[in-house]
Length: 195
Image (tube, rainbow, N blue to C red; front, top):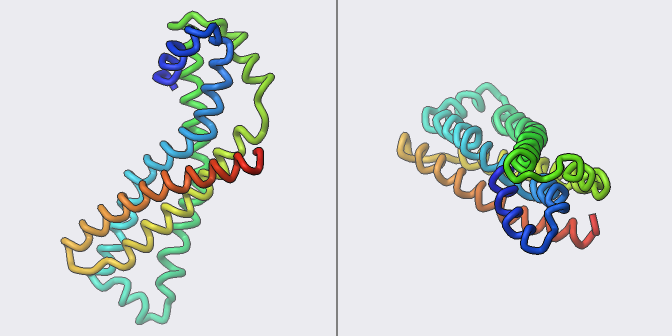
């Protein structure tokens, strides 16, 4: 948020459009940056751990032991992780959006000397539910995608300890690429729907 405020100020001040910085920063964070950066944080922290944990369970035959007890290992191990990621990511997006917008506001007010009332008023006047809703919907989809990738890659690990490392790296890379591709398509869909 702080970096975006400084960069936008440099561009907007050339056109005398500093008054629109508040809303521009707000929508760029809530629609795009919040969901993507929150997803990347979850990928680096949770998805890598998920893939490593499931991979270790696979190579040490713990998953095979679960299946010999007539328990569906996919329902027991994968589904809860995917659901947890789906619903925790939108909450992290809300937290990220709040912190980023607050920091952008403070930098704009205290360092760039923008009118704080005008900054907030442009957000109030132009804000719509879709500005926040699109980011939360993206967070839900991204949570499903990255949770599924981490669970699937970890579950299908082969090759001992080395295979666990390979699976962890693969899960992080695939999930990161998926987020960027999915972000483009979801943004395009929201634009077509005028939402």
